[in-house]
Every structure is written in structure tokens, then in C-alpha cells.
Image 1 (tube, rainbow, N blue to C red):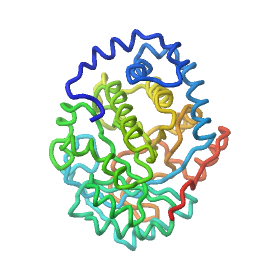
Image 2 (image 1 turned 60 degrees about the vertical axis):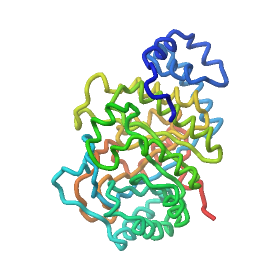
Image 3 (image 1 turned 180 degrees about the horizontal axis):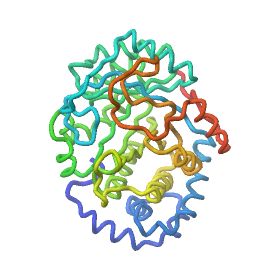
Length: 361
């Protein structure tokens, strides 16, 4: 557990907000309470100084590079009732699952764009996408990609070890929100309603030997400051517990135009930038992933500020890369640029797009 249950967040925030922010920017290592100070509204007037240090740290640890990856959705079947998701069980839509032949055709089409890092995704319906099916899919795509990641229903360590043996090297799993009460309210039924089992999933993936684990919260479900703080502590606990594992963090936001988001839970662009900067200053080696939920212009402007990984040419419906029509999407994307267009945008900012930085043995 990255934070103690029932702790007084308001008291922690009040104390953190009174700290000397400029003094914190001269420290080489930050405590959790100092990280909270940089997340707090009190640090907003200091974004320029935070950005300068965050940029320097990112270049120091990652160079002027942005890793590119693309998602491939295998199945839209889901047993969960998550109020914010397009795949929720109660939605009356045509559900799909790719055959192995369709997995092959989509993998081949996506690989032709130059992408070498692939993320395989499913809805959470273990009976529809059992371990054997997932292993078969991994064996199909691993011939086209140097890195294969998964974002699927949580598994136990032994099951993750089987997928690692098949060729998976990275795991993405979002807690969605670290607020237990709100978590219960937005996950109405299904296996995902088990908060603690999901919270412990990244550690099981790291223990199974995945080289990379990516976590995060979905902003718009709860107090964004609380979720940002908890996600940072979660990432730190994983870095401390599994020093050989690359730990990354994503910051997906719900779009208020597409999903009802209470005003107090909306994460503004300025605060979004602040959170990225605070993560970089707190955890200099942390990978930071930016999805196509954000607009093209906003993503481009974030390139020098700490982001290390971006999706490109994304399709969030089942398959789709081979030209066949899929069903509805899990969520709508805002940046619809192709891989080639993303490549050009990254280079225009003076950065190098990285297609491959991992070769399995």
C-alpha cells in the first residue's frame, strides 16, 4: 500500500503548501511531503523554474528522445461495470474478439508504419480472453515487434510469468483512482471492484520479471491532487522495491465533453503540466507516458517538459489497422496523427523519436 489507509490528506496538504517552493527546487532529493508541495496550488507561480529543472533532469536521464508505441485492442468483451468506460458490461453494443489471423494482419499492418513497441489491450473478461488465447496472440505479434506489452485484466504472478515466457516484457495497469470510496462508486461490479487486488497488481508483474511496469490514475474520477500524490508514492514504492524494473507513469484525463466530470475533479492544462514537472523532480528516473487522449498541440508542447513516451497512430477500437471496420472505441482520442506525422512533430521540437530500445534475448 503506497499510503496508509485513512490518513489525513488535508492536513498533509496544508503543511506542504506552506513550504518554501524555490528552496525545494535546489534539493537533489525530495521527500514525499516536498513532492506534495510541488503538486499543490502553492507551486503554480513557480512552473517556469520547475520546468527548467525538469527539462534538465529528463535530458540527463533520458536524452532528447521520445519513445513511440501503438496499442492494439484484441477484445471488447468485459464483465466490469465501470461508469466511465466504453466497454462497460451494460453497454448494448456488438462485442468483438480478434482471431489469430486478424491479430496477424493487424500486427503486420502496424509494423509497416515503423512501430516496434506494441501494447496489447483487452476488456476484462477472462473467460473470453483466457491465458491460452493471450499467449497465442503474443506469439503471433512478437515476430513483428521488439517489445510487447499488455494492458489486460489483473493476473497472478504465475500467470504473468507464463506471459513473460511467451514474449511479454511490459505491463500497464491503472488504479484509476486511489480514493477507496470513489473507487467503489465508479466500479459497480465485476472483478475490477476489488481495490486491493488491483493495487497489488503492478508489484506482481514486477515480481514475475517484466522489465517495465506502467501505472497511473484516470483524472476526472476523484480529486486530481490526491490521485497525483498517491500515484507518485505508488511509483516510488515500486522503484524502491524493484530497482531493476523500469517504472513508468501515465496521466490519462477524462474528456468532460464526452464524460460527465464534476468541476472539482477536472484537471486543467496548467495543473496537468505541473503534475508532470513534479513527478520528474520527485522521481528523476520515472518514465512518463502521454496518450492520444490529449490534443496534438498540447502533446507537442509537453515534449520538452518531462514526457518520455507517447502513443502514435492509435486506434482504440478492436483491430482497425488492417483496414477492417471495428466496433465502438473504449474512449475517443484527440490526437489522430499517424506515426509518420508524430515522427515529424517530435523532430521539429529537436527530439529524436525512438522506435526500438529493447531487444529480447
